[in-house]
Image (cartoon, rainbow over all chains, first blue to last red; front, side):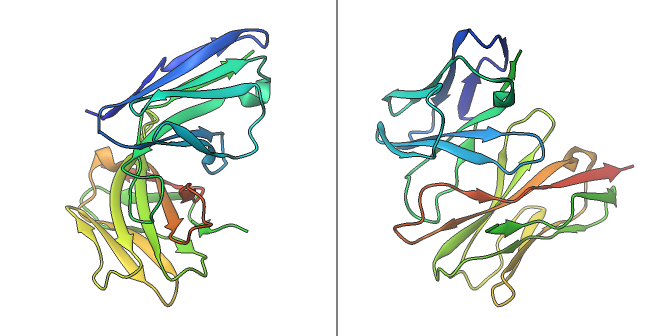
Length: 115
Length: 117
C-alpha cells in the first residue's frame, strides 16, 4: 500500500470550473512535490515544498495554485484551465528536498481531463 | 539539454528471461544519484532501485540490479526472471548533488516493457 495518497483519481472539468487536487503522505517526509505527466513527455516538476515552504516553482501558469498547510498535506487548486492542461498529475514526497540520495515516493496520480 | 536518455521506446521479453533497459545520463557533477521507477497502467510511479555516484558496487534489489558504468555515464536496469506483472513503463531518473541543481528528479522519456508468456 502506497504511503502517498491522492484524490480524486479521475477528474473531468470544464474550462470555467474551479477544483482542487489533494495529496497526503503518511511517511513522515519533509518535502512534497507536484509533477505533471503529459503523453509522450518526461515528467515535469511543477512545485516543491520543503517544510511547508514553497522552494521551487518551475514557471507554472497562475491557473495552478499550490497550497501546503502542513508537511503531510499538499493541494493543487485549479481554475480556468485549458485543454492542454489535461494530464496525469502526480504528487511525491521525500525525506528532504535537497541531496542527491533521497528517493521520492509517488502517489497514484490524478488523471485530469479539461473539456 | 536532455539529462537522461532512454533510447528504447519499447521492449519485449519472454517470461522468466532477463531483460536490460538502457539509460544514459549527462552531468558534470561528481555527486549525483540515479533512480529507476516503474509505472504500471494504474499510473503510480513505484521506486525500484537507487545508485549513488560514489557507490563502488552495483545496486541490487531482489530481481532488479543496476549496471552502473560511470565512465560511460550509463545506468542500465537489469530485470532477471521476468514476470507478467513486470509489464509497465520504466523510467530512469537522476538527481544532481550541487546546491544549484534544484529539487527535481530529471526523468527520461521511459521504456515500455511487455512481458509475454
